[in-house]
Length: 173
Length: 102
Image 1 (cartoon, one colour):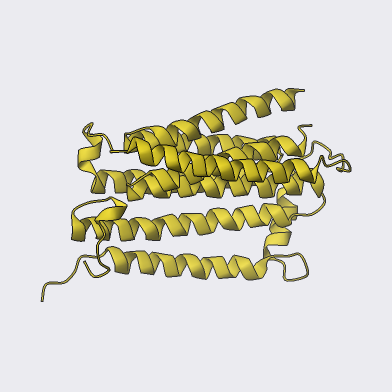
Image 2 (spheres, chains in turn yellow, blue):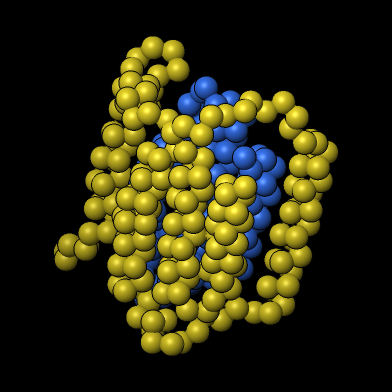
């Protein structure tokens, strides 16, 4: 019961913030509402007893990615910050909304067709232990993840270098 | 325990809110924020399916973990590109980019 109440609160926060995020005209407010959505999703992870995942979500997304966005907003769109609204055409908004609603309808039909999941394992309300996660993350056997772990570290290095190369100032000839 | 269908409904709605933002917005940064919403919807799905349907496995959790890492890298590179676009075109809307060279 407590789980259901928590889930409802988190779902309302997530969906409300997401709606405001895509409809607000100020870009800084959109970034702030995205932060609320990220916190709500972290709350969902805590509700599912994935504590490590929730901590990763807060530290990487809410701490890192949102900061990058706010830096970029400050660097790029100074006029947007000073109250100039982003122009959204109403006709285009209605057309896109219709397209999105139709796709949502199709996905809902698929979900309803799939039916309720009857045989779901009753799960103990115990969080996944950190030791188990650590062993699975750096083990090299079946269902262990050392290869993607190493790959993502190389990938992040490549992204750092790529970002620096793309964003650097052009040298004067 | 919250049934897994509730998580499906939540992530479906979040996904399509993100898609709506992506097709409606003209600002590159706002489009990128919508992409983050879509990625989070997918993450919720992975974690909920893993926890509620296969509680003894960890595939969905690690998938979510790696998606978080890749999304951070993706947004960093995308923002570098957007800053470069702003430097060349003096604008941050998607339809201001008229050629690749700048």
